[in-house]
Image (tube, rainbow, N blue to C red):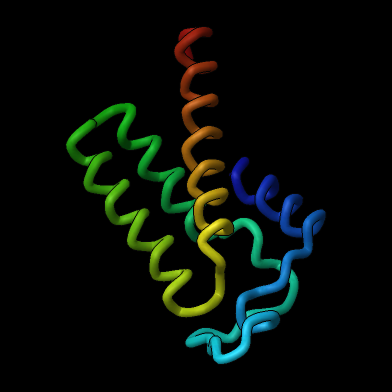
Length: 109
């Protein structure tokens, strides 16, 4: 719930174009709207889930981080994101849940 508005705020503030809009010979396999490439919301969500699970089950979390990485790679592969979009989405998806969990642990929630 917290990751989505943060990513959408950044997307609206930065308004970075998608690869198909500025690179020649790049075609998207998925139809997407314009200037909202940075950061990748799909990648942020995938890493958010992996980060939450990792804090409670390392083995499952590692598997989910691998799957989240595949989500990010797929977003670049289908032509809707640049690698930086995916890296920042992954960063957001890791930092926010870890911060939330740390606050909860500190206050005994």
